[in-house]
Length: 100
Image 1 (cartoon, rainbow, N blue to C red):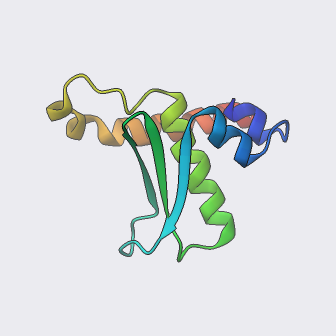
Image 2: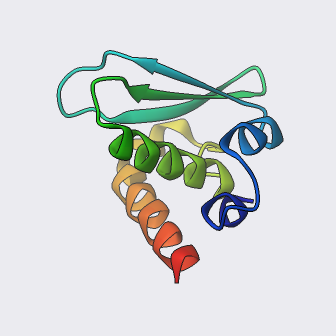
């Protein structure tokens, strides 16, 4: 589905609906661009509203990649912190692969 968004076959609103996701822009501390979490079956994408429009779009796509790659489905929450950088790198690689 993310590929459809990047290729212009669907809108951001459509993909958010598809994934049952909400998007919010809030002031976040410097250096934190965004994050995603699941609460009661709804994905919540939080994006730093102090970013440029281009960077916001990039962060939204990155967070959608986490959803599409099932990174939020963690069976052992204690180990999640050890793999977070791997998940960040995987999301970035996934987007690059889609754009090829």
